Length: 155
Image 1: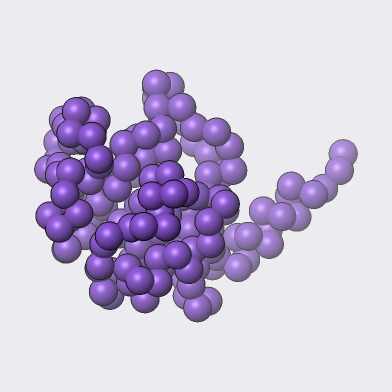
Image 2: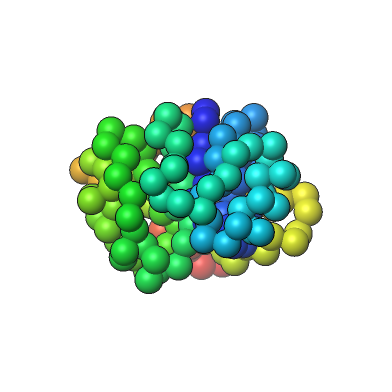
């Protein structure tokens, strides 16, 4: 899959690193700070930008890993594209103004960008309007319920 990473912090770095490790291609990094965007773009051999209007519109998935506050004011429109964010405290529906295909990929543990190789980590996956993500046929509802059961078992 062609992936655009939006953000340049710990979660963006680890998610992008895991995506490339799984054989997906990062096509662009979009970040506020040019130095951080350029660093990740060099690591993943892709383009970068600091301007929302220059976001690649042809990717298969857009992973938005920015602060909760930045999510509320996201100046991005990608009709028909799959856009997910990684914030646990913000509903996926914040992306409704961006696309009708939205969801959340929330890491269930803290991620540190300096740890190499990039660690595996569990995700809580939710999707708008009951749709499934094109991630090996994973059903977000089934995944979330299974995760909840594993997290609440004792012993």
